[in-house]
Length: 135
View 1 (cartoon, helix red, strand yellow):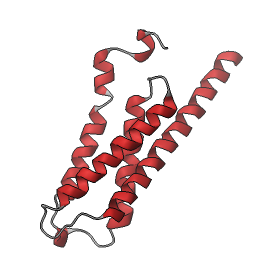
View 2 (cartoon, one colour):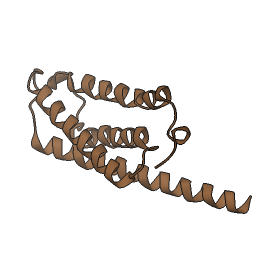
View 3 (cartoon, helix red, strand yellow):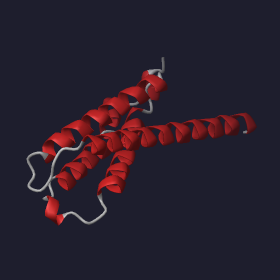
View 4 (cartoon, one colour):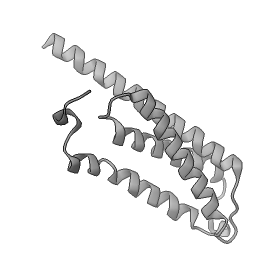
């Protein structure tokens, strides 16, 4: 288990969630746009991109915690649940409807973001380890 210095201060840990909260606000705002005002062709690409970013941001917020695989599953579940709430929210927006396929796309996007972030963190960690050995 990492020591407190490795994990960071409570303030630092809290600040890691600011981008996540900001991005969920962006997703909420996009979901609040009435259906007739949406740009054409948005659905699949928009959901995939929004949730790829969300998955990456959640994984980055959790990155200093041990048990990365378990945290990846938690990050994916949290993003997927947010996707469910996003689809339910759309039931109350004129011209929008909840869609299971949109939620599935959200979940796939989140999985891509979480996976890419794990790959990047692993690559960065191996480079740093190599630099310490070489240095």
